[in-house]
Amino acid sequence: MAHPSGGYSPTSTSSEHGTLEDTVIQRSSAEELARITKKADAIRRACDLRDLDALISHASSNGGFLCDELRRLAWPILLQYDDHGDADVLRPEHSMPPHGDEEQVKLDVNRSFVYYPDCSDKELLLKKDELLRVIKRVLRNYPMLCYFQGYHDIVQVLLLVLGENDSAPAVAKLSLLRIRDYMLPSLSPSLKHLQLIPTIIKMADKALSRHISGAEPFFALSATLTLYAHDIQGYRDVARLFDFLLAWEPVVSIYFFAAVVLSRRKELFEISSDEPEILHSTLSKLPTPLDLESLISQTVRLFHDYPPESLPTGIWRKIPRYSVLKTSRDVFKKHSTKTALELFYQQTQQLRREERKEQFIKLLWNHRRTIGSIAVAAFIGAISIWIRKRGLDNSIFSYMDQFRTAFGGRL
Image 1 (cartoon, rainbow, N blue to C red):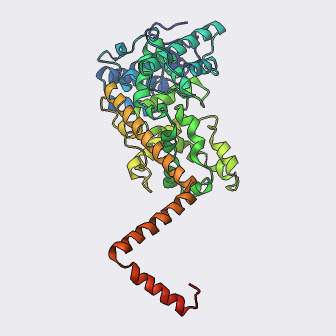
Image 2 (cartoon, helix red, strand yellow):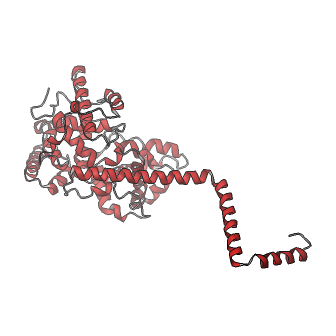
Image 3 (cartoon, rainbow, N blue to C red):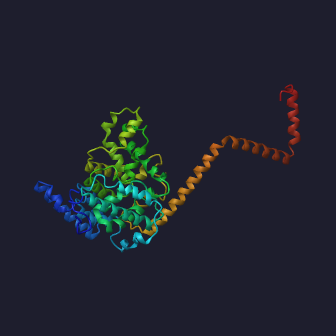
């Protein structure tokens, strides 16, 4: 059943708190009910005033924005499309040529909504149609963006919370301002994000860091690439986590994974460090159940104790200057679509330069013996020319004859 505000009621999704009333019904104590009501009023005021400090605080505190009804007020502000008519910028998908990745999009959409919503087959088909239209609309408006598998997991969360009309501009903003690195022609910039995780863990827990050092941080790729939407099975949990991730700068998603690893200390120490494959397999799956409130609090502490620029070994400097982790650090700054597209172009150019450099180095390495022989021959030739120009050739040949005589012709 469609919700009048553009989202969906709990009868058509697995959301346990689509409206504030749904959230309140689940609570039994009068004290808790009073807290929820007071917080809901404060969230509405913060949205009316566009008070980002307050919204960040609410998103980070117990329960986040509480319900989808309030998320529909807060998320557009956090994603910067609630004013200036940004929603009108996106043209209808049928007015533009297809994006090159649409065949893969269709395959993934057919596999979407695995765990939620809890609805009839007919309603599920309608949701998949909406999901396909939203993704096609964003990709056709910004054809330079490269689709990645798992993108649909992110979009389906925004769709269920915001509805089709509002989710399209939300997805566009998210793609350009928060997950732009994941939509480049190569995933190599995304892999650089993962290298922050071992460093954060080492700062917080050196013993655990040593224990899991044999497992490369690629175990975090699926979760971080999809903002955890692919790995979290409960709609209520993933919507709650999105409250937090959308309120903070993009790098906080990386800190969240570090917090998850640190929370599993006891479990991980039960696995031998001599079994990196088992460690990798364990780390690649989020624990269940997921204590989101505790993990969010731990993430905030990690971020404040070890901010990105303070991390050792120059790991933060290795993140490209045009990376979304660096260009979207200030959540209070208004980022225009034009600026985001310019940054995307600059990232793409930098990526191509790096790829050409890597190809050149690989070429040198593969032909190192031939190149070495040529270099030696060239060096000898250059020295010979220099000797002749200096008029030293006769003297050198005279010395060589003397050496041959002295050592019995062995030279």
